[in-house]
Amino acid sequence: LVIFVHFTDFRLELQDAAGTSIATYAVALPKPHEAPPIPAEGTVSGIEEPPWWHPTPRTKRHFLEKKGIMLPDHIPPGDPLNAMGAAKILVLYATPGVKPTARIHGTNEPSSIGKRASGGCIRMRNEDILDLVAHLRGHSVRVMFVP
Image (cartoon, rainbow, N blue to C red; front, side):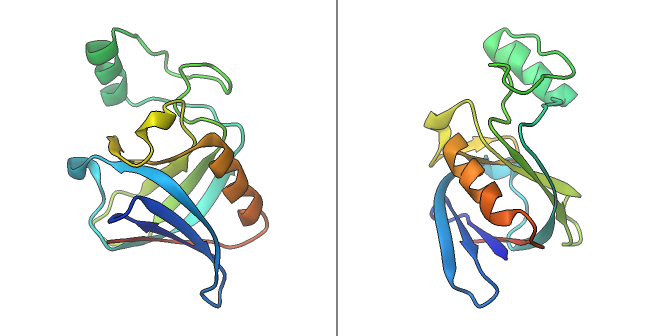
């Protein structure tokens, strides 16, 4: 299977090995200064359902400065502060010069879908990430970030 993340139209598409589209979903993308160089390629290295969230120090500072919220180091599944939503897909990049990992995950901010809103991740509606994860189970999956 191959996941294509289309940056021009905020869309994630799942295709089979023959190039037939299996499913398409609307997504939120990283803010322009946070996005990986395009094109980039990787593989799915893991799926967490439901996921824990381990916010980075930078994310914790952002939440404190912008929202007045001091995030803990580890946020369990189901916590309203858990920005990972219903599931998290870990992507290991194979493209030289690109940070080693990215995440495709659900969101507790569905209004961000269709926007450049994240600090580097691809966000999906929770029902969509669960549908995507169901398609991926038991398969090797390539991920392509394309214009």
